[in-house]
Amino acid sequence: DGALALPNLRPGPYTIAVSHDDFAPAESERVLVGPGATRSGVAIAMRSGAELAGRVVDERGNGLEGIPVELRTPTDRLPRMSVTTSDGSFSFRGVRGEVSVTALPYDLPPVRESLVIDAGARATVELALSSTIYTLRGRVVDERGLGVSGALLTVSPTNPQTPIQRTAKSDSDGTFSVPVLPEPPFDLSAEHPAFSPVRISEIETLDGVRVVMSAGVPFPGHVPDDWMGRS
Image (tube, rainbow, N blue to C red; front, top):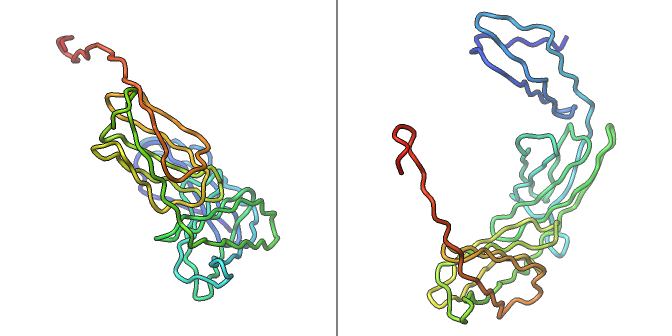
């Protein structure tokens, strides 16, 4: 009859999450359980879902086995995971509404597709991985043109279908190399304790990227302790 019981809970607030193969995941409202109390009348309404079936393929359309696939919705706290079978296929049941599906290969950039699934319908999706990878190279310098060592660079593609973020640090002469990227354009950010952060958008080139960092402004101050008010 759909009834549930959760005994021996400690006092405090709870949210009850439920899942079922044929329904979209659902959660209860926040429930506060007092010491020695019993709460009743907690209702969780589940909406019927659909099956999402797909394949992960290479550039020639051949299925790829053993690729992790992630399913996310705006309301899920954690993603749902699957792994492709020998022909590259995967499936999720109980799916409804806006979802994103991402293939997460170990040695290639990921690929993502977003779609809206109606209840009762069977949706299909194909995620095509590219074996072509790129490396972004450049140099981090200060305003005098001298290399900046140890700058933390974060690079991500602007294409939402290739959701990846790579990091690297500049060498002693300021040069850097960020490998295993999908095709450009990229967004790049650079951080260093002695310099102000820098952000460069829509980088189309792969070589000779110049990142100029300006010296940061010191901000003096002190942090008092809780007891004496001293630094």
